[in-house]
Picture 1 (cartoon, rainbow, N blue to C red):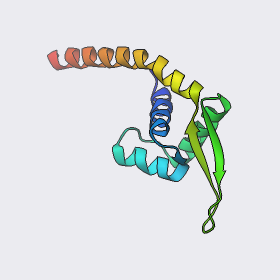
Picture 2 (cartoon, rainbow, N blue to C red):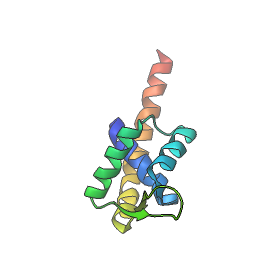
Picture 3 (cartoon, rainbow, N blue to C red):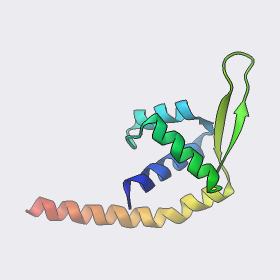
Picture 4 (cartoon, helix red, strand yellow):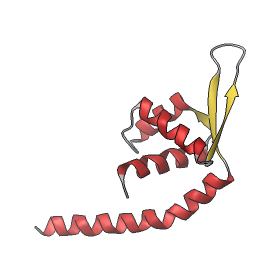
Amino acid sequence: MMHGELNRLTILAALNEVPTHGYALHEQIKDEGFCDITSGGLYRVLRALVDDGLIESTWDTPEKGPARRIYNVNTDGRDYLVSERKSLHEYVLQLKHLLEQISRS
């Protein structure tokens, strides 16, 4: 599993918990230490997820402050997360095996 796919899954999983705007999502991911992604990289992934039909976005236009795009995981996105769970488990097992080999060296 490539780093980019892990970023994509991390973003999708975070949005699955709480719909939010890009800046808050970036801060959440950074604070939780899940992936190291720039804000520009985050917005590229968000656009790709929208284009792939896994998330939707709507404009939040509060009375005060700027309008913000809110991202939300849709049914296809939740189904995608479920389908990728097995791949992630396999990836973790491969990493554990690799770490054990390195430790024996």
